[in-house]
Image (cartoon, rainbow, N blue to C red; front, side, top):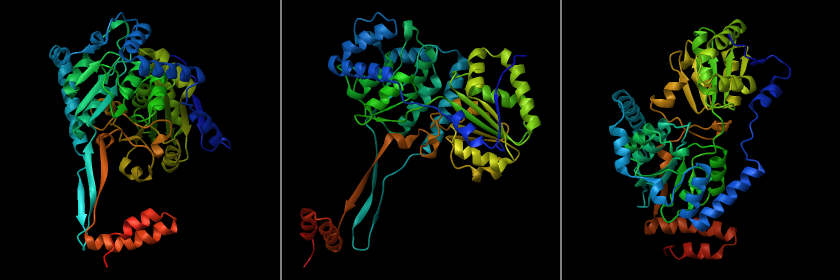
Length: 435
């Protein structure tokens, strides 16, 4: 048993709202030092292109590259990684890829139009982006699942070219990441990372092509760089630490819930794990399970720090109040570990992904359920959605007036334009008015 000091709260406390705000507080904005480093890196990459990428890669990833040619992996190298995978790993990767692709196929939007009575055509043309870049963490934090989750929706959307960047500190290459890239149809892979990789994707260099959008997780320098280049290029989101919120009715095996909380806490010390339950005795049972199971975890030091600094076990009046608090938190991952999750679902308004029922562990969503695991964090689920096919498609409005339609709407436009003192707008419309 390992004693773990986890914050205990009750919704009946007079200062509960303030306590909850303090618990959730997370400032994702980088400090001045990080911002300055990122600004300098971006400036250098824009000015010196490939040479800046080589220099920064050698400096930050402890490499000895002489040119960008050494930092690009061939499609043959990717194919070899997939071919050489142990059979069990390849089968698992293929099963996950199939499910992710099948789920995202249902998200595709098609162009549409309609014709009004006077012959005017209105509609929307949906087209994929030409080229996107996906950032994949490297080194110890190597996630082949991130390759699938970022590349496959782009592939389903019809993106012409997918460029992947993945750092390889000390030259350490993760074969599973490369195999996932081959399986997902990634076109080019560069072994670069950090703010310099983001800058290269955003502005292009002699070797790295400029992309239309950058997606994928990274450290604070990557997140800061994505924020800095937004506008020159699209980005998916600025992601904070991973989060899990569990609503439980007190009837799920407490060991299961403890491990579900661990599943996010093991990401890093800033990850957040919260349990809401109306049964105080059950909260005590989960606390006991945490202390019993923690010594069995490989990343127990990270988990312990995460739980003691950012986790909470919260006693609520009932499941309705739990849903209300959950909406206030707007978590990245929400588990409804209750007898009837369908009954509770209508009360849930803000969550990145909702895992329904006692058997639906959040970990399944990370790898193979099918829906995307790139999700809004830090309360941004109030206005953001999971990464999807729609993130790689653009929509253009279609407008084609008939002579009669142009005449009638020209009268309307003329009145409104003159009301705004925009005479050229008005006269442009008035030219089309039929006598």
